[in-house]
Image 1 (tube, rainbow, N blue to C red):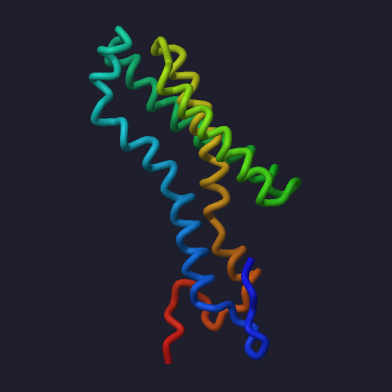
Image 2 (image 1 turned 135 degrees about the horizontal axis):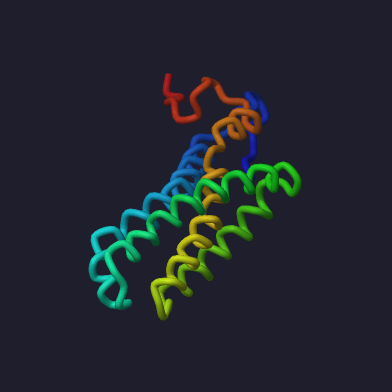
Amino acid sequence: MAEKTATTGIVPDHERVRLVLIVGALSAFGPLSLDMYLPGLPALAHDLDATAAQGQLTLTTCLLGLAGGQILAGPLSDTWGRRRPLLIGLLGYAVASLLCAFAPSVGSLVALRHQLQVKDSVAVVKSGMRAKARGRFRLSSPNPLASTAK
């Protein structure tokens, strides 16, 4: 992924920026998938002929899926490495997102939103990569975001 310079063994700045952007994008999935539909929750319940409580249940199951999925994603990462679970999780997230858009009832939406957040939890676990970045790259400072300007 990153090529180290021959003399210092330090990863170039453009690779650090790339790593920060990838980790940042992975970290954004969870908050975006929760926060973007909150303003539309009353309209969602109305469109699916559901009560407000049933509409709010989609939020509850999202949080349960996010928490439970992280418990599963950690050991999967230990077993299969980081890349395979992340790619499977992102593919599952895309499929679940599409299915959520066409959910015919609030019950199916609740189940799909749960699965969406389970898949998203893989990205959340993988975005906690500071330790990985520090272990993979020999950084000039303990903070991978710190400036290297002298």
